[in-house]
Image 1 (cartoon, rainbow, N blue to C red):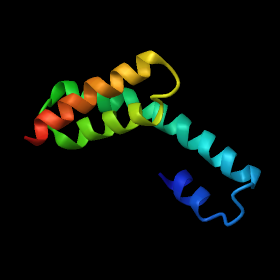
Image 2 (image 1 turned 45 degrees about the vertical axis):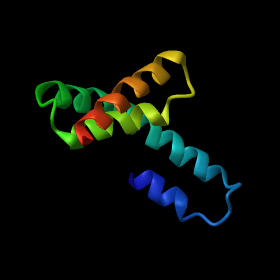
Image 3 (image 1 turned 180 degrees about the vertical axis):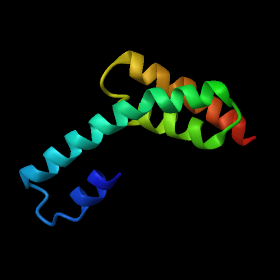
Amino acid sequence: MEYIKEAGEIKDWRSPKIKELEALANEEFRRSLLPFTKAHELQPNDKYALENVKNIYFRFRDESKEMMDKYNEYNDKYNKLQQ
């Protein structure tokens, strides 16, 4: 999230630094997916882990059908947990 915050502070939205920071953030999000998924498997009712998995898949949902399907799966689980 630090990379996202730093990118948001750049006033010139055309700055190449923004793309660089977004790429670094995406690497970190991808790296964190497995630990959050494992945490959710170990504690299925843990809202924090589930929300993070859902949000990461949301971030990459446009990359592939698989990512969109995973987002939908975890979004459904998240919504059910909220009820």
